[in-house]
Amino acid sequence: MHCAERRDATAYEWLAICIAGGERRDARRKTLASLANSISSGWLADGEGAGESAQTRRILTMSTESSPLIAREPPVGNYSPEPIGASRSPCPVVNALANHGYIARSGRNILMNDLNASMKQIGMSSLLGSVFAKPTYIEFQDPAIVALRKPPSLWSRIWALIRNPYSYFSYFGCWMKGQVDERGRKVIDLGNLAIHGAIEHDISLTRRDVDQPEGNCAGQKDLIKDLLASSSDGGKTLTVDDLGAFIKRRIEQQLIDNPGLTYGPDQHQINCGQVALMMHCFGNGKTIPCSYVRAIFEEERLPWTEGWTRRKWWTMGLFEFFGAVETIKGAVGLTF
Image (cartoon, rainbow, N blue to C red):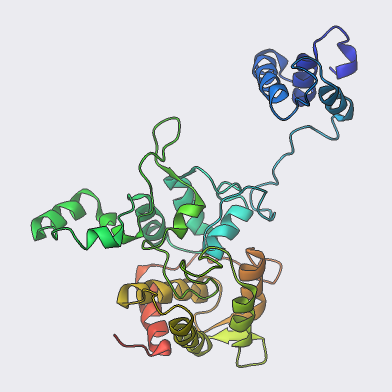
C-alpha cells in the first residue's frame, strides 16, 4: 500500500505507512504511528502546530520506497565511517570494529558479549579476546582513590579471583555505575575506554595525553605521520625494532610536552601489549605493512582491501601474546 492509496488517513498514519512500506502493517503500524507522533512533536515540528505541519507534508511527499525516511545501516562487515554523534575510543582497532558493524556503529550501549565476540574478527582467540573485553565491564576504580585504601588481604584477593577470574585485570575496568540497558544488563559506550587510569594510558602511539589540549581519544595526524615515517625500509613495512624506537621517542617527547604524565611498569605493559596485538593480528609478528597501519590509524578501518586476512585456524592466544609483549619491551629497551 502506498501513501497515495490512503487519502483518508491522517498525516501520522501516512508517515507510518511510508516507513513500513505497506508491509507487515497490522502490528507495526501502531508502533510506527506512535513513533511518528513523537517525531512530529520533535524534529518534524516546525512551529506550525502539532497537526499536519508543512514540514510533515514535505517529508511525506519526498518519501518513497526507493528513498526511505529511515536510513538503513550497511551490512555487518561493510565499512562506513563513524556516524554523527557516535561514541569512539582511543583504540583505532576497536573503533574499526564499530565502523564495520561488528559492534554497534553508534559505539553506544554495547553489551559485554557483543564486545567479546567482536575480538575474533581480528584473529584473537576466545580466551585472549575475553581478557581484553570482559574486564572492561568491571566498575572503574580511580587509581588515586584506590591508593588511599587499605590493601585487600591475600584471602580477599584469592576469593575475588575464584568468584571472577577476570578480576585479575580489574584495572581495565571502565564501566560506570548505572550503565545498564532496559533489561538491567551492563553496557558501556566506547567513550568509556578513554577514562584515564583504566586501560587508557599516557604515551600511546597516536593519541596525546589526557592532560593535553588535544585530549586522549582522537588520533593525531602528526603522530600517525611520525609513526609511518618510522619505517626503516622506505615506507613499506614497520618492524618490531621500528616500533620499539618510535615508542622510545614518544616517551622522550612526552616527558618534555607533559612532564606531569603517569607512565610506569603497568602502563608500559599495556602499551607494549597493544603493539604486540597489532603486530601479530595484522602483521606476521616481525613486520606489518605500512598500508595496513595507514588503514587502521587514518581511517579506523580493517585493511581488507590492502590484502589483510584475519587469522582463523591459528588465532593469537595468551602464550603467544605474552611472548610478543616481551619482544616489544625488549625492542623499546626501557627499564623501571
